[in-house]
Image (cartoon, rainbow, N blue to C red; front, top):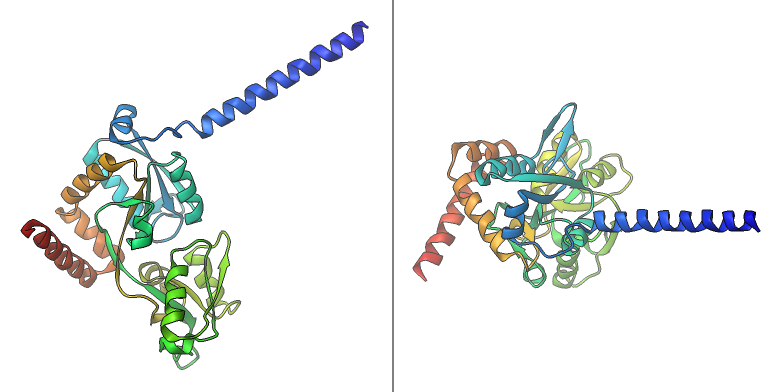
Length: 292
């Protein structure tokens, strides 16, 4: 009887301990599950941000970290006098899921501002002009198989899982009146897709031009000059319940974009011509808004 009682107490204690641990993990993982806007973040002094683990957004080499979004976040941290807790992610779908659940306050990744995306999220002011491009190999003479979008009929294009690229490719298939096969690769980003094309494991992939420009520089046999989409504005993404935070970030970004430090950062990743074009279009938009 004593032994049975001891066993019962031991099992009960184990169950209680497991419940305690489980509760602790749930609370830890959902510490930010309550919708947070600027006031909550300012009170805490920390903003939780997801970034894309890629050479363009967040890249680790040796002991140094680089990337346009990462370095811009450092500027924003100083401008806003707020700590930014950065979390690199390899998949956009996971970042969006954790944003929706309140784990992250912002996704600092270049995401296209489309009508479909605006139905679910709000965006910061445009940070980049970008477009979707076809990744393909060149032959020994530098030629490629596809230069005209009509030649994409019956081709298989590989994309990152849940990438916004899918909708554009589906629309393009309707435009050319033919089938374009789409294959999503889970846990693969632009860098991995470009490597697969370069090594001949797949023939075609689609990613945005900004990432392709940075990544393809390391591969002599990669071409990305065939457009899949028109030029689009790209921005950081927030939940719809964070409008004040979005407005605050826009204000900080506006001040940052007037500095020489920002110009140096932008041209470092995208070049002087792209910087001048972005500034010209942004000024035209601002003038149009001011005239309304």
